[in-house]
Length: 626
Image (spheres, rainbow, N blue to C red):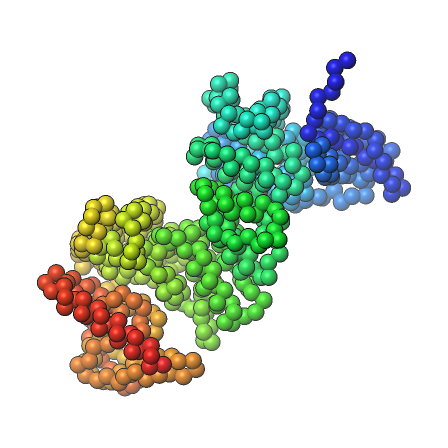
């Protein structure tokens, strides 16, 4: 008599009467176990029925099914969604975009059964249970159909019909894939590259990807908790995988990390929200210092992020950070300076070489949070002030430019367009060479990659055509400079191709004069300098804040120039200026001064360098005067 093949899991069907559980049956096939459990429950002979899945190798037990006559049948709830991709082909239902929606929509259902969206798509038992839950199934279909209809203009009823057909096809494909259990064995014993090669040689091109996903789902289903599932995926990822192969693991890890419960298990207890967000930001970049007492997969996952490109998993972690920042829940248990401090540290942790990691959503969230936490006693900052404060935290123009380009794609920009476009225009007017983007000492390769990243962002932003064309031409010029030895040579001004009329379309022009009444602040310490002034009449006081007191640096009258240093060295204002009496000012624009300084640098580089040294010394004296 042939022996039963060894199975990785067994399924104990247990029944309850008078509060006591006993084993009624043991199955080695999950579908058969679920079928038998429902038959026993339907017989009305027992108070409750449940299934324990027992992992053969470890003895780990997990309840995957439990029902009783007194149980609240409402069960898990649907999580509302605002958008959902329309799947044009059947294989699209298995793609990562679709699985993200499933993860959001059915979060409670997935967490209840410790399964990922990928596993759900290939498990006929869970699919049948979902379909039998009229409330969950119907509401889920309505949510997705409504979101798709809003995007396509179709009728929701038509979309629902398509989704019901697709669900039936998904169940059929799950049965078909489960019949090919040898694929799971190949994956475990020979690895993902071999599995892909074998499936490619036996399965038609249009079906190959679903069979690869199916093998991954079967592989994950043998683990009963999130950490073990991550461990299995890390075993695959730590092999020598090319970019076309690692993406399957990347997506599967991202499936797990979409769940708050899985993330909480991974990173452990955090003292406050900011600590959790910082951990996730550093983890996504492979920079997290894992505590020695951690015994889960966190260290291995951090090493993976450091070693390989994992865009899906990285975006899921950063989306969690941006969602937290865009809310109103405090970042710490304290308030005031503590909230301010942890926010600044977090912003520095999510800076990339060309903007904030996390893209437009992160930039918008940072602005919304900055309005709340970077203001002083007088209340929230304005949109323009929040942008200025965030840019002040960014150490170079490449990060500032990437931040503004990403911000131009957001609703925040739609609501505050003059402020965003104004900051962008002032910044790009100051770009003269590729070396002006990044700190001194940056390698040629870093500079080129930075410009390429900025050009990619430019292609996605919603900018006025004149600004886009001019900035694109300038970045192309900077890129060519960076690809040659002379990366420090000045390029043409960014906006030389924009005439005065076009400039007015981008941003309302300012007068070349400005009036200030007694007590008016002309500019503040720490702001980005975009203009200098000649005092035409009146008197101006220059001061710095020193604790709770003001340190007066100078009192200047007619003919004096103020605010010039920020325009010369492109650093934030070193001090504030306030009118001591009614004052008239002549404006020196940054563009005007830049042209003059560039001309000076071309004609007398020594004198230009002396000017830079004098400005730096002046800043030093101002700091020591506090």
